[in-house]
Length: 165
Image (cartoon, rainbow, N blue to C red):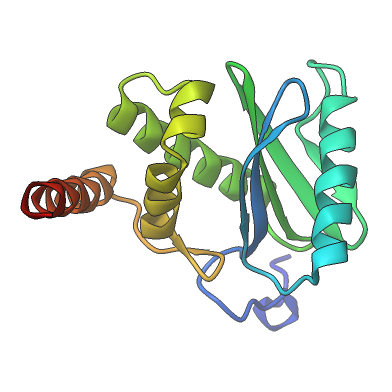
Protein backbone atom coordinates (compact mmCIF):
# COMPACT_ATOMS: atom_id res chain seq x y z
CA UNK A 1 0.00 0.00 0.00
CA UNK A 2 1.38 3.35 -1.02
CA UNK A 3 1.26 6.03 1.70
CA UNK A 4 -0.83 9.12 1.12
CA UNK A 5 1.51 11.89 -0.13
CA UNK A 6 -0.69 14.51 1.55
CA UNK A 7 0.31 13.10 4.95
CA UNK A 8 4.04 13.53 4.27
CA UNK A 9 5.82 16.26 6.22
CA UNK A 10 6.02 19.52 4.33
CA UNK A 11 8.97 21.87 4.25
CA UNK A 12 8.85 25.59 3.68
CA UNK A 13 12.11 25.84 1.72
CA UNK A 14 14.04 23.93 -0.94
CA UNK A 15 15.55 20.96 0.92
CA UNK A 16 16.54 20.75 4.57
CA UNK A 17 17.38 24.01 6.27
CA UNK A 18 20.61 24.18 8.19
CA UNK A 19 20.15 26.00 11.51
CA UNK A 20 23.88 26.45 12.07
CA UNK A 21 27.20 25.07 10.92
CA UNK A 22 30.39 24.77 13.00
CA UNK A 23 33.93 23.72 12.29
CA UNK A 24 35.51 22.43 15.48
CA UNK A 25 39.04 21.17 16.09
CA UNK A 26 39.70 17.93 17.95
CA UNK A 27 40.80 20.06 20.92
CA UNK A 28 37.38 21.76 21.04
CA UNK A 29 38.37 25.09 19.45
CA UNK A 30 35.67 26.58 17.25
CA UNK A 31 37.21 27.50 13.90
CA UNK A 32 34.14 28.70 12.01
CA UNK A 33 30.50 29.32 12.93
CA UNK A 34 27.65 30.26 10.66
CA UNK A 35 24.14 30.85 12.01
CA UNK A 36 21.06 30.59 9.80
CA UNK A 37 18.45 30.38 12.55
CA UNK A 38 17.73 33.16 15.02
CA UNK A 39 19.60 32.69 18.28
CA UNK A 40 20.50 35.32 20.85
CA UNK A 41 24.10 35.59 22.07
CA UNK A 42 23.58 33.40 25.15
CA UNK A 43 21.79 30.72 23.13
CA UNK A 44 24.63 30.75 20.57
CA UNK A 45 27.27 30.34 23.26
CA UNK A 46 25.28 27.56 24.91
CA UNK A 47 24.72 25.80 21.58
CA UNK A 48 28.42 25.94 20.70
CA UNK A 49 29.39 24.59 24.13
CA UNK A 50 26.72 21.86 24.21
CA UNK A 51 27.19 20.65 20.64
CA UNK A 52 30.98 20.72 20.92
CA UNK A 53 30.83 18.59 24.08
CA UNK A 54 28.36 16.18 22.48
CA UNK A 55 30.41 15.68 19.32
CA UNK A 56 33.84 15.46 20.95
CA UNK A 57 32.69 13.01 23.62
CA UNK A 58 31.41 10.45 21.11
CA UNK A 59 33.57 7.46 20.16
CA UNK A 60 34.75 7.50 16.51
CA UNK A 61 32.74 4.40 15.50
CA UNK A 62 29.39 5.81 16.67
CA UNK A 63 26.72 7.16 14.37
CA UNK A 64 27.29 10.72 13.15
CA UNK A 65 23.70 11.78 13.91
CA UNK A 66 22.68 13.05 17.33
CA UNK A 67 19.24 14.10 18.53
CA UNK A 68 19.64 17.42 20.32
CA UNK A 69 16.71 19.34 21.76
CA UNK A 70 14.10 19.32 18.97
CA UNK A 71 16.75 19.15 16.23
CA UNK A 72 19.39 16.83 14.82
CA UNK A 73 23.13 17.31 14.86
CA UNK A 74 24.91 15.85 11.83
CA UNK A 75 28.68 15.77 11.86
CA UNK A 76 31.66 14.34 10.03
CA UNK A 77 35.32 14.41 10.97
CA UNK A 78 37.80 15.26 8.25
CA UNK A 79 41.44 15.12 9.44
CA UNK A 80 41.61 17.30 12.57
CA UNK A 81 38.30 19.14 12.04
CA UNK A 82 34.72 18.21 12.81
CA UNK A 83 32.17 19.71 10.40
CA UNK A 84 28.93 19.99 12.38
CA UNK A 85 25.49 20.99 11.08
CA UNK A 86 22.20 21.32 12.91
CA UNK A 87 18.96 20.60 11.04
CA UNK A 88 15.31 20.13 11.91
CA UNK A 89 14.07 16.86 13.35
CA UNK A 90 12.20 15.97 10.14
CA UNK A 91 15.14 16.70 7.82
CA UNK A 92 17.15 14.00 6.10
CA UNK A 93 20.50 13.40 7.80
CA UNK A 94 22.11 11.92 4.69
CA UNK A 95 21.29 14.98 2.61
CA UNK A 96 22.89 17.14 5.31
CA UNK A 97 25.94 14.88 5.36
CA UNK A 98 26.17 15.28 1.59
CA UNK A 99 26.08 19.09 1.97
CA UNK A 100 28.91 18.90 4.49
CA UNK A 101 30.90 16.71 2.12
CA UNK A 102 30.29 19.12 -0.77
CA UNK A 103 31.59 22.01 1.36
CA UNK A 104 34.70 19.98 2.27
CA UNK A 105 35.33 19.04 -1.38
CA UNK A 106 35.13 22.68 -2.45
CA UNK A 107 37.45 23.75 0.39
CA UNK A 108 39.81 20.97 -0.65
CA UNK A 109 39.92 22.11 -4.26
CA UNK A 110 40.24 25.77 -3.33
CA UNK A 111 43.05 25.34 -0.80
CA UNK A 112 44.59 22.22 -2.32
CA UNK A 113 44.13 19.62 0.44
CA UNK A 114 42.58 21.87 3.09
CA UNK A 115 43.82 21.71 6.66
CA UNK A 116 42.94 23.43 9.93
CA UNK A 117 45.59 26.13 9.38
CA UNK A 118 44.01 27.07 6.03
CA UNK A 119 40.74 27.74 7.87
CA UNK A 120 42.48 29.67 10.67
CA UNK A 121 44.52 31.97 8.42
CA UNK A 122 41.98 32.26 5.59
CA UNK A 123 38.71 32.22 7.50
CA UNK A 124 37.29 35.02 5.32
CA UNK A 125 37.74 32.80 2.25
CA UNK A 126 36.13 29.83 4.00
CA UNK A 127 33.15 32.05 4.90
CA UNK A 128 32.94 33.27 1.30
CA UNK A 129 32.88 29.70 -0.01
CA UNK A 130 30.18 28.80 2.51
CA UNK A 131 28.17 31.90 1.54
CA UNK A 132 28.39 30.90 -2.13
CA UNK A 133 27.17 27.42 -1.27
CA UNK A 134 24.49 28.04 1.39
CA UNK A 135 22.20 31.05 1.69
CA UNK A 136 19.64 31.32 4.46
CA UNK A 137 20.35 27.75 5.52
CA UNK A 138 19.47 26.30 2.12
CA UNK A 139 21.88 24.88 -0.45
CA UNK A 140 22.05 27.30 -3.37
CA UNK A 141 24.59 25.79 -5.75
CA UNK A 142 25.69 22.19 -6.10
CA UNK A 143 28.22 22.93 -8.82
CA UNK A 144 31.74 22.89 -7.42
CA UNK A 145 32.96 24.50 -10.62
CA UNK A 146 30.60 27.49 -10.29
CA UNK A 147 31.43 28.07 -6.62
CA UNK A 148 35.16 27.90 -7.34
CA UNK A 149 34.73 30.27 -10.31
CA UNK A 150 33.01 32.78 -8.02
CA UNK A 151 35.82 32.45 -5.47
CA UNK A 152 38.41 32.94 -8.19
CA UNK A 153 36.61 36.12 -9.30
CA UNK A 154 36.63 37.35 -5.70
CA UNK A 155 40.37 36.63 -5.42
CA UNK A 156 41.02 38.54 -8.66
CA UNK A 157 39.05 41.54 -7.39
CA UNK A 158 40.98 41.49 -4.11
CA UNK A 159 44.29 41.32 -5.99
CA UNK A 160 43.25 44.26 -8.21
CA UNK A 161 42.29 46.25 -5.11
CA UNK A 162 45.67 45.57 -3.46
CA UNK A 163 47.55 46.63 -6.60
CA UNK A 164 45.58 49.85 -7.01
CA UNK A 165 45.50 50.69 -3.28
